[in-house]
Amino acid sequence: MCGRFTLSDPDAEQLSARFGVVAVPDLRPRYNIAPTQPIAVVRLGGSAREMVMLRWGLIPSWAKDPTIGDRLINARAETVAEKPSFRSAFLRRRCLIVADGFYEWQKRRSGKQPYYVRLREGQLFAFAGLWERWTGPQGQEIESCVLLTTSPNDLLRPIHDRMPVILHPDDYALWLDPAVDDRTRLQALLQPYPSDEMEAYPVGRRVNDPHNDDPRCIEPLPTLFPTG
Image (cartoon, rainbow, N blue to C red; front, side, top):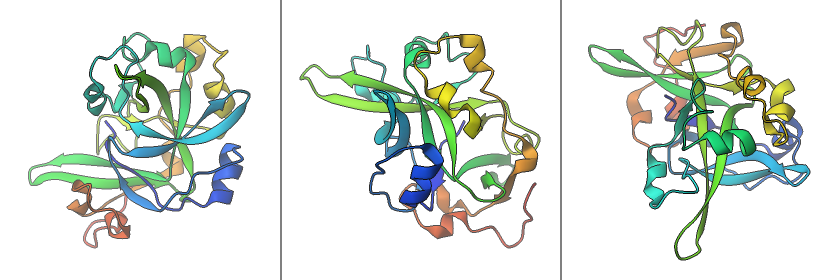
């Protein structure tokens, strides 16, 4: 499960270049993005990519109550094509969830220890995501999304039994293309990211509270050593 992530350096020029979008929303640095909050997502809008803000926690189009999205923040890559909540979006509404790091919690006798995980160069990347549009009984619309997870790589395995799917930039176009509906081809993209391109280090439990959203969330603990 991935329940928190970061977008600490949302430079508009870098975002535009990395994800091939013309317009970038006005974003502030985020160090503790939590479920139900609006997050930056790249999807196809007509024939061009667009970056939009969607609610994290997918609300299926058939849902009677939008609060179901509070629980649907992650989807397992192994079963996403079959699950009723996700299978339609998996075939037609795939997206990139923009980030530059994420947190996982390691179980210890003293409690859960948070780790911050990122690419070695600290660069922007994208989680594999799905999006959906829900229309309420009064005609109100909510656009929401879910983040895909897979088995952990060697770096994450000692920390947690799942990790988010990080897509390679070469696969962005395929993942976003709604004309591609080959499940085998799509699921082949949903692999653990290479360990040797990532690093992880323990951080303080300040991140446990979603109200804490500042650079101190990603500061390494001084008494522990980084992994990777």
